[in-house]
Length: 308
Image (cartoon, rainbow, N blue to C red; front, side):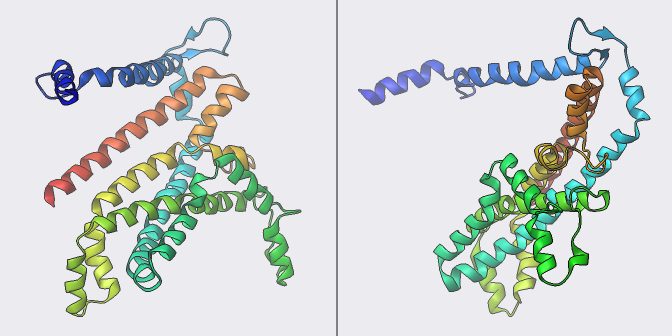
């Protein structure tokens, strides 16, 4: 009786294409109100001059013209390139190597429990709230009371102690290290999942034929993990371009503009200077860049899938 009732319900709500469209309606409504409407409103504001009070004043492309000659705006995108290196390139490379080592060496020799514990340890920074992680690293990197400088001094190298977050020469480097620490666990978990679904008989055959671990990693593992690599590069690159919380907590874009990124620069104009229209223009440019980059990576991923 229950099966017949369920079958009637499915037939009632199932359209000719076999899609249960009514279940999509709540999500579509939420997406429209929260994302689409907000995005369109933001685009409108980018063509206005507004301080958040009263009615916005239409000024056309003035905000975008100002962006073209804004050195801080262009500098913020250069910093995003550095953060792509820190959040996408380096964690992907480290994740591939560490995941392969855990899967091929640690798990067979020390057991799955040791491998799982190692993976959990690497993933821990992902589940720590960014404000807490940022405050922790801010304390550790403090020039006066930070543990990093204390350890360097105790080891007999006081000349290595630096003002890690207060010196423009070291601030970007320090934030970059923190971002790598946060991001690498995510890539390891994704690649471990990919290795678990990969055909291990190919590795075994190659090992019997005398292939070294590095040869198997370069020729077999990288090809088998191509879908996961594409997904990781897409998600981490997007995360790098819209990074905000670590910069806000640790440096607030400083010292000066040494660590300013587009998301923080948009926030700075929105909130701290009340230049809402200008901040909206920055966020609109960033959003369009993210959309274009996502489409390019998705297209590349689809081509790779067709060629496999």
